[in-house]
Length: 263
Ligand SMILES: Nc1ncnc2c1ncn2[C@@H]1O[C@H](COP(=O)(O)OP(=O)(O)OP(=O)(O)O)[C@@H](O)[C@H]1O
Ligand SMILES: [Mg+2]
Image 1 (cartoon, rainbow, N blue to C red):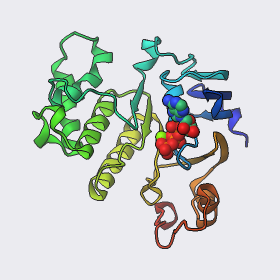
Image 2: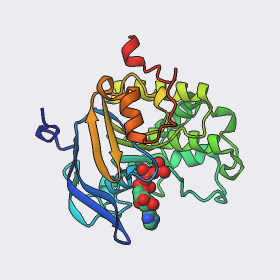
Image 3: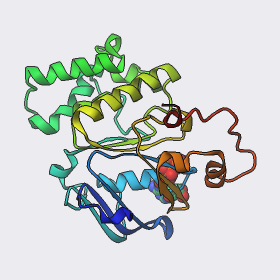
Image 4: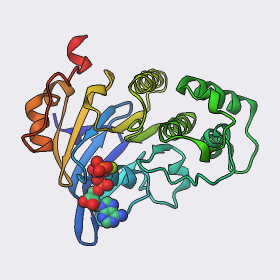
C-alpha cells in the first residue's frame, strides 16, 4: 500500500526540498498523514525533523514541492490554519521575561479560539486548569514563567498545545528535559486525548524506549530524506536503529521495551 493513496487531506507533502544556504535540510520528501494518525519521527541530529515540523506550521520556508495541511498551504501569515495546528517547538521562543504566570501562558493556547485580546470564557479557564492539573503543574500555576526549570517550561508548553484542541499536534522532542515518570504520565495523557479527539500527531523524539503504544507509524529521516516509513513492529529493532543512527557504538541492550510487542 502506498502512503500517497490516502483519501485524506490532513497532511500532504509532495517532493519537498528545503535549503539553508544551499545545504539541503530536506531533500525531496514525499509523505502523507491521515486524520488521527500518531506518527513518531526518528532520525539522527540534523536529519531534518525540526525543519519538517516547522514547514508544516508555516515557520520555515521550503524551495521546492508542495505542502498541504488541511487542504491549505502553510505560511506564517495563514492564521486560520495556524490555529488548527498546535506546535511544541524544540526550542521554545517564548520570552522568559514576559510578566505572565504559568496559568496565563497555558491560557494563550485558547487565544486562537476565543480571539486574541478577548477575555476567555469560564469554560476556557476550566480547560486550562484541568490540563494544568493533568500535566502535573498545578503547584506552579501562579509562578512567573521566567522562574521555571527546563522541564517545567516544557510541561507548560505541552499544556498550552493541548488546550488549543487543534486537529493537528506537532511535538518536537516535547519531553526531552522531563523526568521519566512525568514523561510516562504525559504520554499516557496524550494517548488518552488522542482517543477522545482523534487529532493527527507527529511526534519527534530520541527516546525510543518511551514510544507510546498508540503510535501506529514510524518515519525515519536521514540526511533530509525519508529513509524508512512503516509500522513500529517493522522498524523498532536493534538492526534498523543501528543503521539509522549509524556508528558501531550504538548500544541497544535492554533499551527497547517497545510496548507493542508486549500487549
Ligand atoms: N536556521 C538554520 N540555519 C542554517 N542551517 C540550519 C538552520 N536550522 C537547521 N539547519 C540545518 O538543517 C539541517 C536539519 O536541521 P533540523 O533542525 O531540521 O534537524 P533535526 O533532525 O531536528 O536535528 P536534532 O535531532 O538535532 O533536533 C541540519 O544540517 C542543520 O544544521
Ligand atoms: Mg530538531
